[in-house]
Length: 311
View 1 (tube, rainbow, N blue to C red):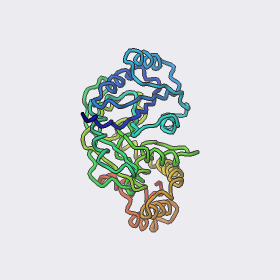
View 2: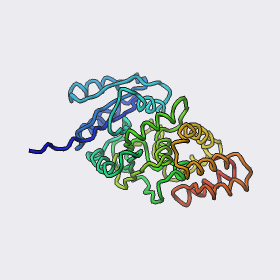
View 3: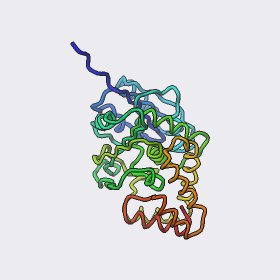
View 4: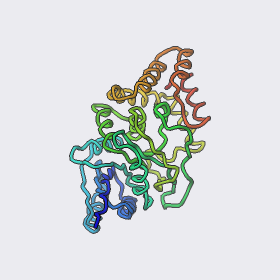
């Protein structure tokens, strides 16, 4: 009798902080996954509410493999980065998880089916659309469907999916560890998209939503669509926030420059130069670099940023 092939392992990496309102529902959705070979690791960033008690009680009741770490207490991105870099966590794949979402039952199963069709010798990244829900889990809308290619030229100026949908392999993790050494990173998920696309990786963008992304007053990122979101992004652009974020990302990407393809090294060099030159040269380098965002309106915003030298 033939043995069934072993399933690739998944390390689920969750960041928690003051999550008592919603974390139990998220834990239930994780334990309800149709894909069985996973372990859960939670980095708590200093919760003072009942978050840790809820996690410990759930672990005892469900008898699941769950380990809790103390986070660095420097914000959500630093918490995820520190957890991802922990040497004692080893797996075939890694899945970031927010404390307040609800996962579809086949989230992991669908992702692994997609990733197992790719070469494990290359960095791999799965991500997907989401369903936005309110604090009571009532449907609001689906996240945008991005149809343009998922490339480094896109990743330099835009993240196409939330980290709460991302699953990546060990090759991607090692590059992430190298890039984030001694660096301040504005968003761990955006950087991961940049890293994998820069280094001959494969991006699997699933048009099927994999999670219910809860919107509430404590969201650190939240729904990034609609008129209010566009106005907020324009305000951040004018204030120079995008410029600061790009500077931080570039600093991290410099750490993996030698791992990039030659083509992406050229794109990266041109992008860095366009941020420090005259107006006309900025637009020439924009054209040569091929950097783009996913929609017409977003590309207009990009060109406004280039014009104002705020990129």
